Image 1 (tube, rainbow, N blue to C red):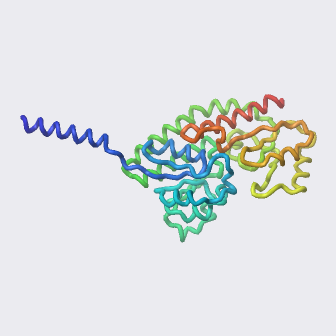
Image 2 (tube, one colour):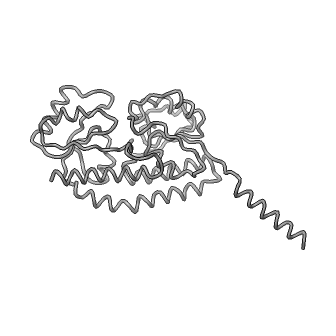
Image 3 (cartoon, rainbow, N blue to C red):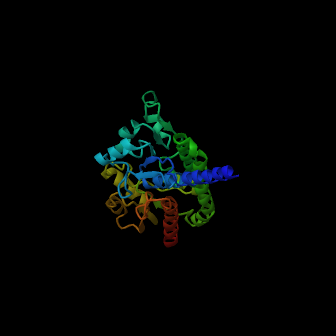
Length: 294
């Protein structure tokens, strides 16, 4: 009897040590705050998820810094959207082992023969985090990739992705109902980043203010934009990372309101809640704009 009791105490002790023993953790990098937020929701708290590009800076023209090269070199895996978004980092990220691009533009801009270790996902839009449905798919893909990197926790990653997806699902009807008020809103976007959001809510912009975010609008483009706005009411949306003077020059004395959209989450702390806060903020700006221009 003493022998069996001793074995039982030893089993309990070993079990307790296993619970206290630190689990294998992943060192991950995500390029932009909304993507970082999605990865944080799927990864475990013991995993480190480093944000590469702060929300205050545009990923389109962001350049690599030495500290970032160190983060990438030490990472077990890197999540990014693709070279049409993180343009300034495209070469480094395309050559990064265990990098995962979550939009379809990566497949058309990378030589697969030289990057067989890379994973590619076919999402419709490089700004797909602004769509609930595309974000839910991204959560599933992130869980799948993390499960490949750490198969012992694959089921756990899948459960966490499902939980995050359910949170979006619960909020989606509310956002859809709120966006009904903006169904007839005339609006102009600063750059062409909102296709996924617009498609999900059945709306469309009048025109784009800065067609190429890496170069200033030409006089001809501004003239065409003024003509598009002539005699109209509505909202022109600027963004925290981009120069708002082009919107003001185009509007002139037209009765068009200027409001700020925040697709990268400048107004929010990085972390699990940021992605949902970004979507809620988008809906709020559109509905407020609709209320003041109707």
